[in-house]
Length: 371
Image: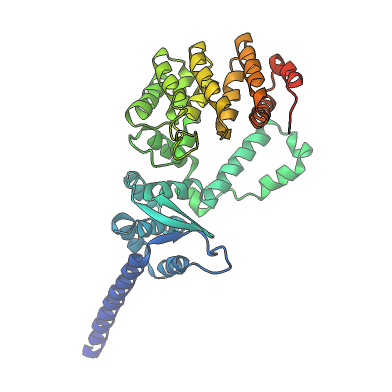
């Protein structure tokens, strides 16, 4: 009896020792993780060191270990990868960690094949949820389901699409811990929680917000109080007089980030953001600022190609004789320099192809492409 008891005691201490050794090993691996590798290939046919560390961590860490790491480890990369492994194991405790980490702006480097970039913990965690293969499959499945419900004849017209739909996974372990309702909840939290400009997915959800006073107030806070620039174009969907000054201020930042020779040396201001806003709110009060932008761009020999593209999209949104004359005048002005003319003609035609309008049809003939 005594021998049996002694054996049990020894086994107990052996298990405790093994657990302590494993915890020490887990901490040692986490301490070494200073970069996250998104793939097992470094882009040159090799395996990144950090990928091997991640695999090792996955093999020795318990879910409880990972929860502790994701919440408390001083290495940002270790917090991020511990969360990632928890999600792949479908441990529902990810939810509390995700929501409590939304303000975790600590940065770390991450590898995608041979490209090294930087991310922050909160953004990484949100990306992990919205880009997880399980949830992406479910979203695609739901989208196809709605398409075929709307038009059952598509089953016969597009059998290859229907076959794709039938082969899609309808549910997985991940789906049970992150449902479409969870996705909607996350979007709502990202929209209404202040100071989350470091989470890129926030920009993607603005279009889906309803047009009501509550959401207008929140967009107003995002832009004016928190400096979240993408909120401006969504504010412009409301056509409020109080927001016109902000649009004009953005438009008139066209020369920022340029030296005296008009060569880029840094960020180019918010002019392109303002042009996007005008495309959603073509008000005549913006025309003087648009003329300044136009006159500045026509004189330049170093082009902001995105700006020229946005400029014509904004002008064509007016859809009136004034905008017709403005575009006609601009294209005529570009005739002085062949290179300037080439890009203006190209982006005018591109804008027309995206939003064909008979009003501008004859300008295509008047100013033929030089490409």
